[in-house]
Length: 277
Image (cartoon, rainbow, N blue to C red; front, side):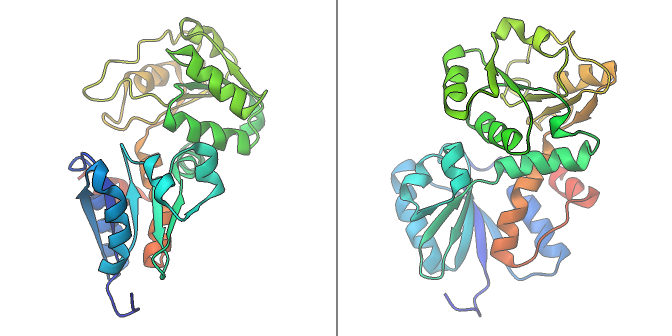
């Protein structure tokens, strides 16, 4: 690839038509007057490795990776970042000029930057955090919370053994609580995070007791369709500081855009408006 070629990036997944990433990156490319294109690409599992190896020759500088390929790409990549290794998944691919594939994970970064922007009063050391769910998103959230110094993370998952596996891997600051005890573990929490898909459009509601929530607790949901989930609505009624999941989606895209197109984008209200379409 020569410097005269217009840089290309995109998002790979299956399905991919629902992705809002093209809206986001397209907005930034237009805002900063940058040459480049961001393209959604649906790829079948049996052609994933072939597609990734071919893209650099076509002028691609990188891609985002979404479901169901976040784990698979780590087996294909030539280099895997420490963050992606810790989380066990990659969402951002950088193609080196020699065609080598570098896999990284920016989900934890996106989660933390969303909190810093929309709940700046939250201090990581101010108290325990409650984390609902133990899937891939939970791993990214958990790693970022422990990294910034949260003293205790209480995890609850409908399948307890998945939460237990995270405790074994991430250490003694992780405490596992039964799903039916969720309400009790919120009592003195400084932060509550829903990392499950419960509450998303087309999914069952997150039906857990929320009577432990108190005024001033920061509550965030990684779900962004709808923007205001039941969890956030009820938390707002109590007087909690509520942070929706759209900011995480936006912030996790910042490092990739900067690497691919050479400009660090600003996350502002115009950015949110663009992605909401």
